[in-house]
Image (cartoon, rainbow, N blue to C red):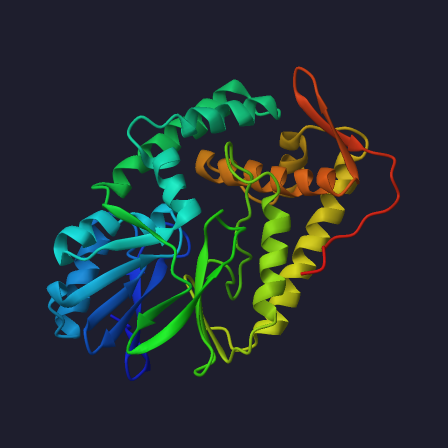
Length: 332
């Protein structure tokens, strides 16, 4: 197991996930009062086995883990939180907005999967594919069980490895996504806010923030202002040039917005637009869910900024608004 020791008290832990990125990187801090954990992983046997290997390698009694912080509610970060709480006895904290999202999405009585299916159908997806999307999402529920007893994280700083780290709210990838920043060490634990090769998925979901792409772009600008030497992401390699990487991600979204506007201006559904944008891939229902939600996030951004009009009929169609003025980013 390739555990990386980042500093005297900080370890970067690769935990396998059954997705193309292969691993989520969780973080362990060794402090005077015990250990602290950031993120837990996706709940399936390979991940649980990996954690037992980690405990053995570090000679760490899991009962000495005093607290678990979850950066956001997505199953590859949150899924093992309940299992980990059972193993450690530690409290589990998550940002307030994602505390609410856990109930909305993962509660046994949740209708979020059904609402996503309806969103897809309204935006041009066939009934067959929409149903496949719903079925796949419903199968994810077992990978977040058992559910932890959660506590909303409201502190602006937390103790990690004997030092205080700033908690920074960075909505975009999820409504309640949080990062952790240590100014003296110039280290940012970024989770899925900034990744080294791929761009984080920014999606529009039912019942969530209405303009997640604007949220994300504003969050990027906020993070770009920090003095950071090392960015420790949730997937992929460590990032050592934060400002350059932020600029690359901003450029990606500008290009994506331009392409989607050019496709939408004559009047198309989100599905018709996504079908062109992602035509280089053979998408599974799981991937179609994200392709649709990401397309809608960009289209709604264009609507909010006055570039596109949203026409709600039997199917929702996006078309040129006729307005000339358009600015990609608000000032942070």
